[in-house]
Length: 273
Image 1 (tube, helix red, strand yellow):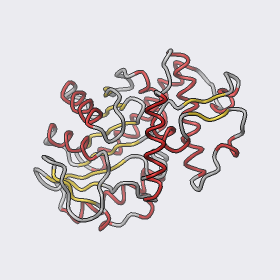
Image 2 (tube, helix red, strand yellow; image 1 turned 90 degrees about the vertical axis):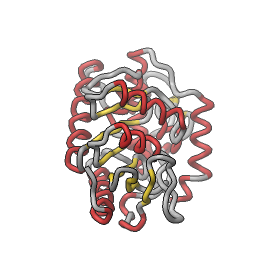
Image 3 (cartoon, one colour; image 1 turned 45 degrees about the vertical axis):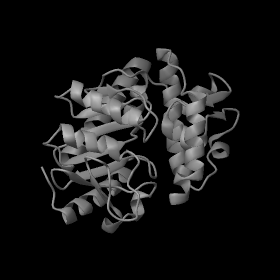
């Protein structure tokens, strides 16, 4: 389906606020788009907080070459939205989240919780786009996709459908996690009993907190930035990832990849706040 452009802009702004309210994203992580024609969609801009977005801040992108109108830069993940719209003509609304439990269970790259899994690629890269394209092509009946170490992609026919998918996936992912690991809360304290260092297992942790943090510190010593609430959410998620990874024998994110993401965040995205 298609949205009229002004309606698409209105719904994408509303979706950003709804994602924050429901705890499915933290700060600028994730992105949202709405189809407006056979070959164009509206998407959230790069590195901008959802609470401050206005309809005119959103970016119109062409699917075939990812070119865009205006001086505002679109999300670096515009490519994965484009390939999804090209492959699925029925789609009208797409949400990419970094929701908690879906991110955790996607660590091992397997299909689960009613979702298929796309293999890992650094954020914004052709590798990630290609892996998403392969996953969507391979699983034509799926609308929810786990992105390994990165979050989830929900392919909706419209706004309501995309949000239903996000909520359903998160509920199913939580059940998978708790069935396999039991009651291991609080995750931060459980990790402190396992060692002295918490390495990055997921992209958003690497970006905002770096390749690793010391578990000799307390939360209020680790999360000291301007976005403490977002940092605590991501810290807890990475702790849950560490517990899940130990159970599944999954290695942390590569040190080089984690360092690259931290550098990009510090020199680029944090300045777009």
